[in-house]
Image (cartoon, rainbow, N blue to C red; front, top):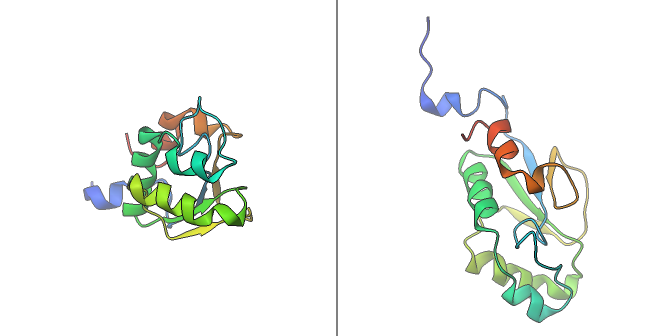
Length: 124
């Protein structure tokens, strides 16, 4: 039986790196909090540290992380500040949504079940 290294073990379930879209409000911010519709709310939103840790792990595994949000373009700088302040690692940010391989969002199944994301990507 051939042994697999720990670096290959992490990619066995996915085969290739994936384009992953991550929502901000109630996903990277507190799921029990409110959505950010003012610059002040964007700047001072409470981070969802568990989800940020997962996103950073996926980034380090080589996946392409796109932050996607329905926030207005006028809030780009406040949104980027929030992401930097909370150490979110990502490749690009889209202020209007488009196609991707996996969506992690407060409106879908995975956003409220971080362990399901960990299981899917073999992070557990």
